[in-house]
Length: 337
Image (cartoon, rainbow, N blue to C red):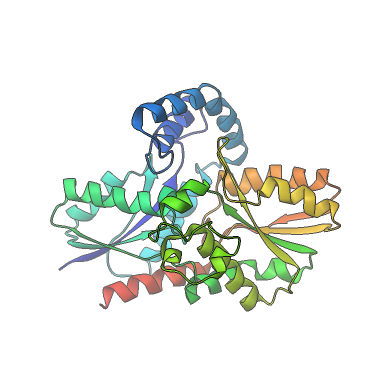
């Protein structure tokens, strides 16, 4: 049996042009695990969003675009290359939306004789709109294009020692410089997604401290996993109690999303006297629009508007050696099984 590795990240427009951004947003938002409504209603909602949002997002993408292309895709390719240097089996990269496509990656692996592939979603935490949709789509495409290929899936690694160690290592230099507050800004998701993913049907969001109460629901609870990541990080990094907090960013629409909201927390913390702010985004393994523009640019403006004095965004792990080692260890465990 010939083995291989497939890395899958979220995706990006092919360019910051309005048509390419519209194409990307349409594919992304029409995913039933992103906007989980009946198809006709989802088509109506997305159609309304696509009237103005592509031009607004294209302007934001222009601020972060590099000579090589989208930061998310460029960094993900570099990670693929570095992992390939460490393992003897094929390593492919795909994006859940747009390019490089899952179909092209599966075809490439099949052409190289892969019959058993480890899918590593580049999402440390379980969420139906990221981790789950990537897993489901890869399995669908593989069943169509390479039915002989078995897909093994790396479980969420939000609490795994290698991931936490890599996260802490990537932030170490920033933590040494001194700060008043460290904000963990995780990507937000609608509260209904949390409830829908709850296998118990009644644990998640039922009480204020549900994430602190042990439950089988936590295996698929994005919120509980985010708080667990933050707790393990501060324990290993030695962040003092009372000097950190958690928030959620990137909400869309008017339905309730996980709280507190990052764009509310930044000015609030500034007005409370937290003058030197550090922000880390552990739900993202690669820098992208949501980290560079939303946090690094707009988040900084929001903090400064509340009379903050110093704002620092800690970059994602990107190509940090400790992160590549964490991926290598996931691969080796699969390869030696």
